[in-house]
Image (cartoon, rainbow, N blue to C red):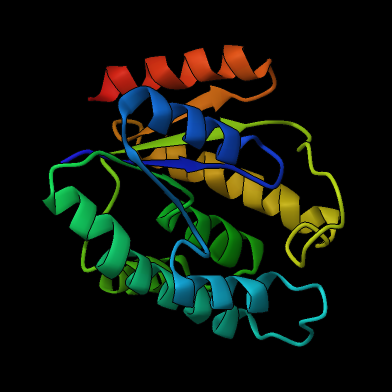
Length: 192
């Protein structure tokens, strides 16, 4: 079983790097939130800039509902078929965004995330660390958050990586797409 997650803040290049890594490995590529039909509905609700007044705990539970469906219908079945799976976001995002960013209890989030995923965690987590993200277009609800929120999220990701250096690799995401892809590839190979 090989399950790889790419993590990072808004505009860090996760989606591009997840796609490139999945192509290189011949892996199943997926993402959170929204990697399933039900998840796409949750994604629209959570990320829509028009969604106002969403309690932090409600936001976390919606993200975890997305994860439960994602694991049950996409990730676990692919792993059981012997496929490698690469996902753009997983449990690290919950801890960084809803834990560090929103200030929710990290232990409670981690336990609930484990329950939602049936205990499934990535074998390797690659954190794309960038000083300033490269977002474009109309910002979604998360991208529109104040700067302090994004600083807390970035600090949270770094803390998560520091606490589990065997599974987590921190990659400088500020280079060209090709340079970052080479660093991601090296980090994954070192951990598998």
